[in-house]
Length: 265
Image 1 (cartoon, rainbow, N blue to C red):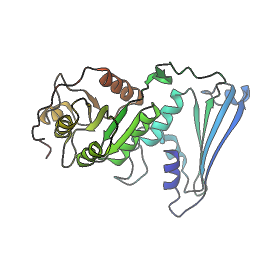
Image 2: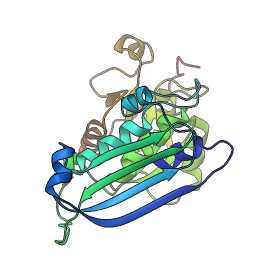
Image 3: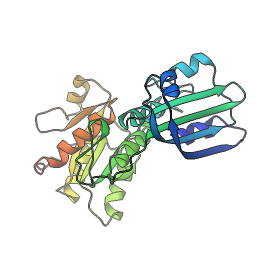
């Protein structure tokens, strides 16, 4: 997400610099940056020579759904996701920017010298991990990338589709297992409920988690609100998503879904 933002900030070209190094943050630095603990860290820096930001923009960049991009070009979730991942890893992130000069993001993550315990069931911040394969079906590109990034970071293998037709093609072409489908409810063409029914015909063991930003009334009209359906409302945090995904994957096999026409069509 940081690299994509850097590229967007350099529409006429420029230089992207990625740095990583071991650093020791001392007491003086920690005193000047209240969220930082002194000690050994790994620093990751992403710098661009793009348009830069003014101070009011810089103060808001980590707010969910805040974006300076044109309508339809950004969700405002990219930097919020970055911020969440860094904080969940007990790290800190700082931004340096000047209009016309470019921007640098610096991330500091505490350095750990011990071996990682592979048996640990959760990641920092209550993010539940897994290794299954999940198909994400979302027609909004930005939201699709956010969901994919969250799930990959939690250890899952992720396939993505921008609509129901692409999702069905994945089933035909993918030889390995697909354990779960995370699908938007309202999409052009094949909606989420019909897609789930058609998926169940080809792969009866696939589990389904529906997502939507619409109200419960809207979901009821689309036939996905009942006691047997797994659902997550957008926007969601990485903790909410990974916990719900784990809940669905651990649930008993789903009952057969009737192949009824989707009201969204």
